[in-house]
Length: 223
Image 1: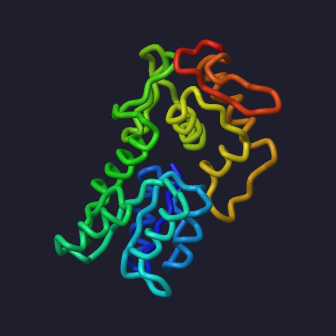
Image 2: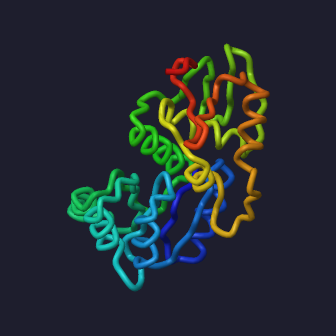
């Protein structure tokens, strides 16, 4: 799960990035409000952790501007502004959740997973489709009740497919969810990971629509 972190405090930002990375998140980190707004507009992240006291542009203004441009990415405000009016203002500006520093990393991770689930219309903590069960928190997968061992990248790819079950995703969209800034991506990386998933699960779990992309059917059946 690829997220955007907007935090200007170097020590806190490094700690958040390291802690969330240990829990399976891919974290892109910006340090000012202008960069935060710019990156939110790209739509490349599944969630945003946004500090409000950012240089160049206040985080609240970045959030308002992004929402005004139609950005729907879930945003969790993480700030030292703990007064109730500040929380209300943040939520009314378009935040989906609000946490006050200092924060427990496990709670932050859980809230991010919940935001992403809701954004994809998935109310359950575990995702299920085509006989596959995926637990994002435990990073475990089962096929017809039997555990399946996946690499980190295979798990992340399957997670993206299951969040978007029934929706066609092209290679570019998948790459944006799987790789951080600056990562070297082989031209056939996505295809290799999909091949491995089909081998470890079932070939029909992920369907190729030639010239369009890939889709994981909710029930495993083609239309």
